[in-house]
Length: 101
Image (cartoon, rainbow, N blue to C red; front, side):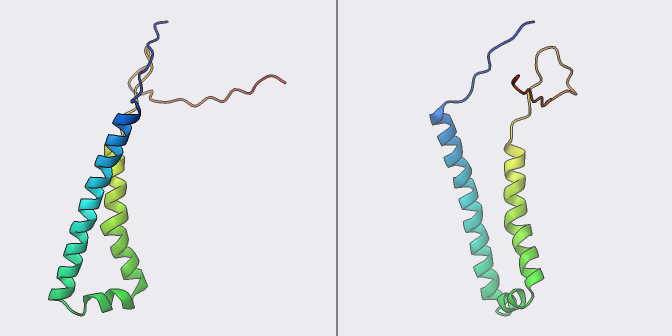
């Protein structure tokens, strides 16, 4: 069976990718902060309305922060590589082998 050694990214490319991810997310959060401050300036009762209803506040936080960040990381994940000779439908198989006693 033909096996190829997989190469993994080194420390520097991983640190650069980490920094890029957090720059993108930090920019998004700053944009979100600007939009929030602008909304409060235009609609003064907006913050009181969100603060008065905990469910609305949680839903707003989920939709504006948690969901977009989760989708960003889910879309940035590389696709799994099939082992040589495997079909495209087979992506991953977990096998646990116990050492003999």
